[in-house]
Length: 434
Image (cartoon, one colour):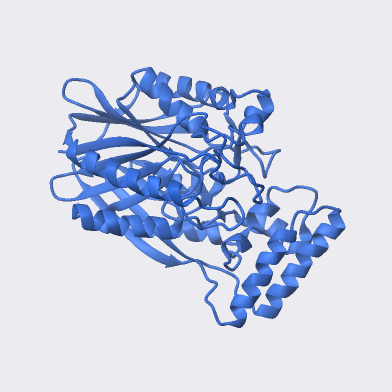
């Protein structure tokens, strides 16, 4: 039998805290909350093993913050740390919780502390709220029309075709938790709302789940969305309603499918966790400095001032290389299986093509992908995109496609190899053999 716990806490966002997202740091200081930011905690317990998933309405959970809080939760509540996962909605209108990217928002110590307190409080309440679940159903809600667009391959426009969902029902027929999983970037709340804290379209969808009484608690997992933007946003509709424009059709597709699901087995809980060295391109200090100059040359060629900040960070990477520092990337991968469904935790932003491959090859009956989980590993691009832009001077007039490959310097780590997405897929598929 599965015992499920859940709880939520609002994260207080201080006025003038820097917000994370939308390119190079540009002084986006919070002017107020468009909607609340939540930490939500979910426990899955089969009587022997317990998994805990911490959900936050933030852009990413950086690696060190996740590791620190995982250790704190494991110690305080006597949990197996390998079964503790962190996921983020990937809203671009929340302050950062750590220091993963250096130019996208200065960390506010008060927000950090508010987040940590909310994580501990939500986890404690979730553990206390555990109760037996009588029935669990799962399904895939097809989208009649995409709510996202592929920003890299615009002509092919491959997007996430379905909403993967799992519904947890009590003996009295009430739904305790509705888990929903889809891949579209959290950038609906832009334009006039770019300086207001928001949980973006995912937060609006979660609110509708409660208002429509589809479940007591929503649980969103961001699917493969590294190259998927919302079709409509505040900037497109020229109002504050971008979140609504994205979330409303999404919820219509989801709600229409919730009675068509299949009853699944959830009698066992298992998990696996591994810290993995990613495939990166080793460079000497001299090679890094040459790359920095190539980015400056790219700016001059395009008559823009776009890559200058990145060049400065590569210069700093060269200084670290001079001192013998390790510039490789070590990220945390995780799989949590609950009977027939499994969550594959991706420590970065996986493209939709590799994401669809992972879903197709996964052995779980109902596989779910949670990206930007446990770490801020950046973009896991496909090999086609990597070969289109083989070096810093290959940039054409398009930002997207090139940007995802050549954003590595903001984490002061080496560039990923062209096969990084395939590496991610193979790593998770190997881990699912528990």
